[in-house]
Image (cartoon, rainbow, N blue to C red; front, top):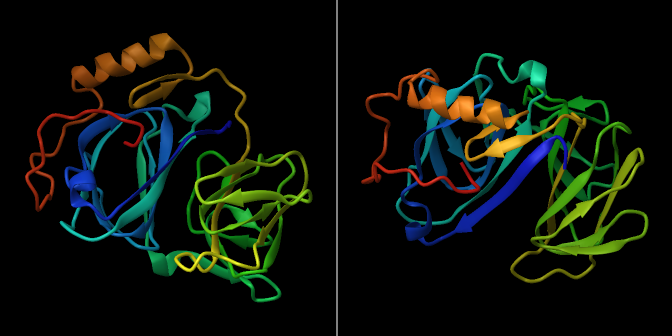
Length: 273
């Protein structure tokens, strides 16, 4: 869903699922956004950036021409929950210098709907005349909204952006047609200048409200060549990225990254980075 490449939700209270974390590995050609709902992760990269990622906070990493980083849990029990979004970069910015933003929960822009039924956390982009703290290379907007039972959100939206709503918990409806949505489902909107979401009057006892992730961006409309941790425009560029990494041209892995656990030295790439 151009310019987005992947949306990966992770949630577990079993430490066996997350304790190994994601040891040092490379990226090139896109941006990663990690938003935590619960838990504690530590980001470190070869440029010396270090970020403590806790509930309500986010990190924004522009891989650009190349970065090597790790994301390691700083807990050995309890719930680890959040999501990671991969945002493509246009050809002209794939070779930009890598960059990192550590966005703490206190820096996220908090807004409320006119009727007070919806709390919005604006992480990045401009929505309804308000700006989030995330600075994006590819124009996007990212909002986490909590709708109380029966509340309806009518959010102004850029007509040149696509529009997506992912339900984190609860249930409700989306769009003027009031199509049903529940936890784990993604709604893709058609053309328009509004995003409408409504929470059902009755929610499950475990999830008393409808929580949604609202996101959209300006389509890049360029070819995508994607293999493992690299996203470029052509297969030759992806092969070059692997060769550059193996030759040490993407950077030097730090001698020791902070990890309170015994992290395996081998890395297996999966959907989440």
